[in-house]
Image 1 (tube, rainbow, N blue to C red):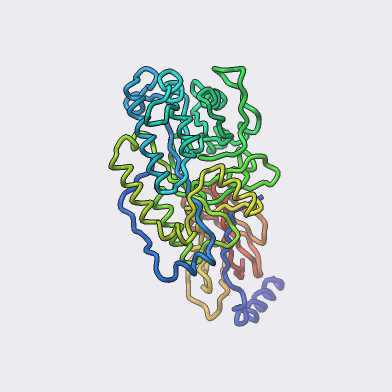
Image 2 (image 1 turned 120 degrees about the vertical axis):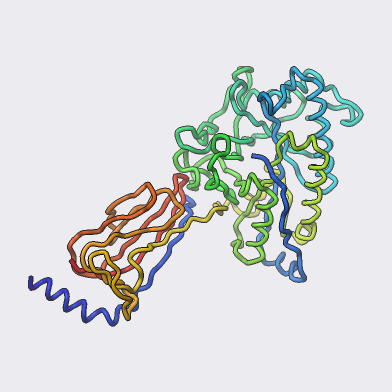
Length: 440
């Protein structure tokens, strides 16, 4: 009893001078679909754009297309439908030539079916200088040719074999893979050489990861990252590990590529992009879009709308292999994990500078320190998926379902630090903390 009375007297003494304690928010991003153009708000370059080009890190933009394996009602079987093959072949050539005219690099990524059809039907014509489409894209237009595989029938090594059989050395870039959830992730799968399933005499080794996603691209916004890093393992895709063998190129807003460019440009102009860090954005285009000439024209318009930023060096159009070379030579392979969807967390209850009596808010105090008498329910607002509650760095409870709260009913007398760590399954986290005086 005497100890508790003494504690109360101490509280009465320290309360008026407790304003030195302030609430802190700590942010941590641990380093260690198809494009819908829509109507875009164009950031118009002003007179200060040249000055920006001298002080702001550039945004590296890559354009990537996929040719998928057959899917009824969506993607044709090019092997069985030669007419569809020639139609899509022309669309890819038109798109590649438009990008070439605009000085924009291009990564063509195809699954097995289109490539197998090319081996059957394509010996070259006047449109491709007598070469098959893959040789023409690579040799005459400078397109980077990457394998892409859903690995339902043909694996990545098989697709790389088909590219090589068409006279082109395939890149060693993984053109899309499952990165989440961890039990389905293939981040570690690509660390070893792959042997073909259909062509078992052929091996292919990945050097670079691109396109880490969820199945069917559902609920993957937390994976939308600008930058390059080396994912630690299947369980920690967004954790950089210098010892990991394969870098991953972030797509940022993969489904809304040009919107992502505009978003990064705005952050660039506001000084939010850190100098010395690499920033990336992929504009992804699905194969069915390309058969529409109007769509190709719209992409061209988007590129031309960004010409002033390109001329000033604020945007650089790069191929994926070229981008990795830039990261190594100009950025010393320094990781950057810049999220599209920023995490947020806030301790909503108790409020800073209030008195609480048995979980009820009583009055605002003439001090910044919160005073709690009796049990208190600590409540948190966040867009994360898990919240850990700590008192004086001791874990008290982890809540993995909204609403996030913890009832602290420990009998104590003194000043304590309450901290909440909010996290996502992808490895990024954020924390909020406050100091309070608790009695009983």
